[in-house]
Image (spheres, rainbow, N blue to C red):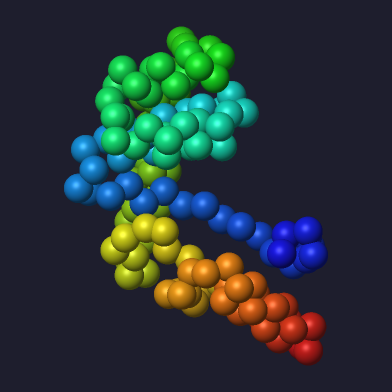
Length: 133
């Protein structure tokens, strides 16, 4: 879809750390910290591969594996701006009814059936609506 409609689609990823996952908030903060060094997606992928073993030690191992500047990574993990971003994303999700992940929205409408064909069809319809305006 992005390739087909690069000017019409914007993907927004929000952090919604599950409260029942002990390291979810720390992991979200760590991923955003890695993002400051251009490695958000790589860090996120590693988090999902290792989600059952997450710990402070594992977050640091992932940072080393990705060749992050460790001092900067540790500093960014404590940055109030990053912490506030994760907390704000979580609050925003709660306010719009998110209770679990993944949660998918298209033009502010929640999509409960998350298969790609359904999402693609909904996106196509939304794009057609905007072209008619």
